[in-house]
Image (tube, rainbow, N blue to C red; front, side):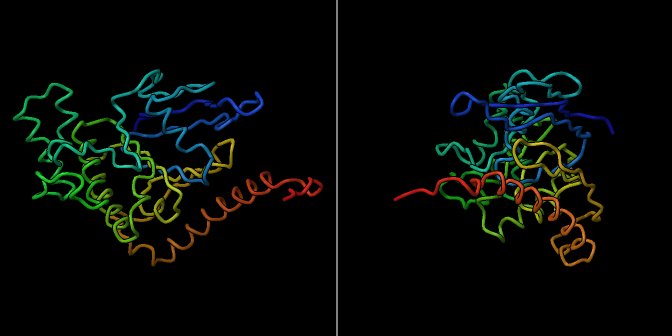
Amino acid sequence: MSTILSAHRVTKSFPGDGGAPLVAIHDLSLEIEEGEFVCLLGASGCGKSTMLSMFAGFSQPTAGQVMLRGRPITRIEPRCGMVFQSYALFPWKTVRGNVAFGLKMQGVGRTERNARAQKFIDMVKLSGFEERYPAELSGGMQQRVTLARILAADPEVLLMDEPFAALDAMTRQIMQEELLAIHEASRKTTVFITHSIDEALILADRIVVMSARPGRIKAILPNPLPHPRHVSVQLSPEYAALKAQVWKLVESEILAHDETARPPKDAPRPTH
């Protein structure tokens, strides 16, 4: 395999209160291989979404470089398709219209774009809903439309920022299995952000555990659980052992973050 997406000694800071910068990510380096499914896992505020934003070209690092196929990403990168937690669908367009929208913007003719849209509507199991509008769909179905729209545009990399976080537990598991099936069929390089250890274990080829802010790489763990992977793997002793290992890493960062966020013992108590 060859490296498709990489970060080299990336630091990202933002203006903070009182003039001191807020460092979201510090000196982070990571290589993602073509066809991999990588999960970025960590507590809130560790810089996961910031890193994904730089891979998409929505923002630039303060120091270091993010690269696609060895070339710096310096602007919004159309070869990296982003799926957000919110569904971001056009409410006035049907399922078919939403899925075909990116193809229309690319200048693809109506017959071809409708055929390609149908292919991905079928892939996410929404056949029969082509003429429905987003308001007529459940949350899980709307996220399927979002995924189909990104896949139809055929990006080289899928960037997914907690796309299933707003779904109920059962729908979330179904969507995880559907995404795994799509990934195994397409081998589309995928970078997926999650707070959920279980979600990372079900989906990832590798799990990147990030430290508390400023975000750094705490550990990179290969996921040896066999494919095709089903949620029933959660009942295996191998799964339990790997989950315990990941939890130990994540827990130490949560505790460290809580300790630094806690006021010192001699700090004055608030008065009411």
